[in-house]
Amino acid sequence: MTTITGTIETAADVPLHVLITFTPTSAPFIQSGGAVIANKTVQLFSNQNDGSWSQALEPGAYTVNFASTPAFNIAIVVPSTGGPYTIDQLANLPPPSPVYTPSGSGSPQGVVTAPPGSTYIDTTGGGFWGKMTGTGNTGWQQLLQL
Image (cartoon, rainbow, N blue to C red):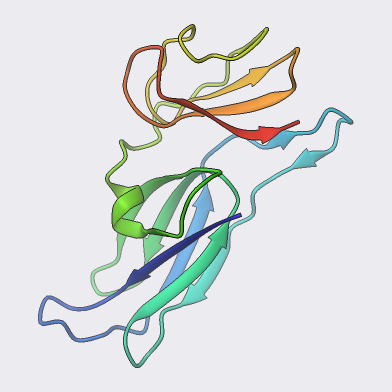
């Protein structure tokens, strides 16, 4: 789990108390035993006094909806290491679309070319990888060991 934090305020720096929804856009993770670990939609409210919020999330791609007026969405990719991250740090990553899940033998790093937000399954090592940066064949990070 990786902790994501943020603050919701108006343009005049007035804190907002709003519903925040994290909806996974990654494919479900599948363990070697066949069990599916699906990221679940998470909802929480920002603090009404200062607009702050904090949420621990599984690695993967998400759409974050802020139910303010007007409502808005942000696409993020949550890495498996580091953090806590601010929502701004993760929102600066390219959006997680288009996403596809190729598979192959071994790490995709330096081998598989894909856009950010893509995923990859290592069929021999049991790893689930996410493409975090770049459009070439680097920028892959292992998200889960299956």
